[in-house]
Length: 263
Image 1 (cartoon, one colour):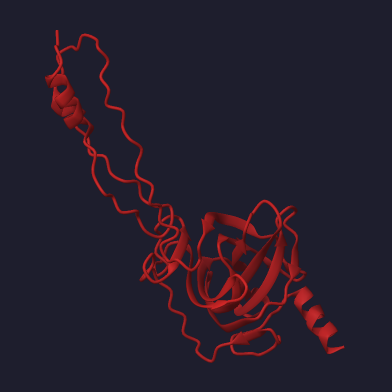
Image 2 (cartoon, one colour; image 1 turned 135 degrees about the horizontal axis):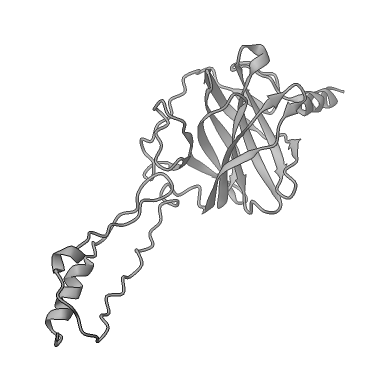
């Protein structure tokens, strides 16, 4: 009977304020502080965000998440600490999946209940990646804490057994009297090793620039006008990739032209 009551409450939405032990598999922290920033991204924690390089401590819209892996959990998971920040009058959510176009996504939802003065609540769901349907999911989550400031929602929580590698999804949705609206995805990352803080920083070198000059008559050309600085592209995630070298096409062209017979 008690089990049936828990499932019924989960089905209609879990409106649990911080510090309230209302659901057996959700454990709230006594610490109500939530501090989310880019500090440590790519070094001690893996970060993803949209728009790219947005500041979760600023006043502009920023959907941001970070993860720190701690101890390994058999068979292929780890205990991980997550941070999530976003703007929504309903909910923000972080999803973990292997393939966003099939199977299911584990959703961790941080939300505000507008009918209860915007109070914070937390919920775990499964999303069907084929049709987007949401169903309640019992997952052991610990150290949950969250705050709501107008439309900004911030939360932190620990997941006992998060699978890695995983694709991270970030998005938002609304909260209604009937529960949660479908999850609107704003960010769909590559498959990431959640235990590696730098796994979302691309290490691929920039494409090689073709500096071959065709054997045709070259008119009078001012070399300075072709000089341009080529820089490594910034990562679409938390930190720019290091740029091992800089390519100056004009210098290569000058060497070729000086060794050629120009009419």
